[in-house]
Image (cartoon, rainbow, N blue to C red):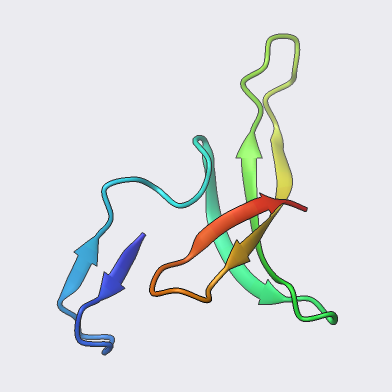
Length: 75
């Protein structure tokens, strides 16, 4: 996760040390449900033994009430 220190697209950008999304997941996109919940849609590859390892969808509930995004649960 990276944030613009100036609030502008040109940056400068500050890179967080830890990723926001779970390990082995990517292409996260934020959206609001009709009820107003902020969710992140992304895909992941299961690393569990006996699984095919194909990409699977994941929805995470996100909180944006502070100065940084925070995952608060799996939807």
